[in-house]
Length: 200
Image (cartoon, rainbow, N blue to C red; front, side):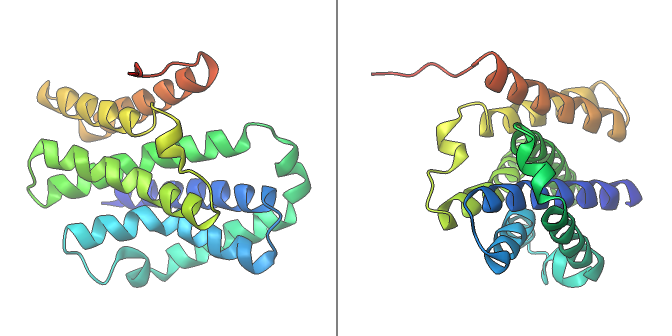
């Protein structure tokens, strides 16, 4: 449980930073940046908890998650000049958040005795939803629909997770392998332009 709490904390920070950065690039005011930061960081986890019937949702029960989001927001504001100069900061923070939140949701699905396929779907929905909601609020086409290896990376990570568990790997080892798979696929999609085939 302590590992899952730590994973949720890291995922929250990653998505909060990515939300703050993209909000600043859209030249929003301080309040607008705060809203996008919250939407990015809690959107996926909120939907996850609603789907598995865990209410009130996690950030409402754990005030330290709210403090973490606020601290991340203020840090992003304070260091905004340096953050905006880092070309790929949004990509990497979003990718780390995606991997961590996906694996956290899969573990929560397992704790609810859900079927592995449902756990993978839960992880994918949880990992992607915060970004989808963020992009809709910013009046952009969600990155989920622009980059083929976004949700696909989550699904692949989930499959790797259950394969490694099947071969008796420890939970934390499976989680690392799954996170690594998601990050590797996102890096390949960004750097080498990997994509799924498109049909005309």
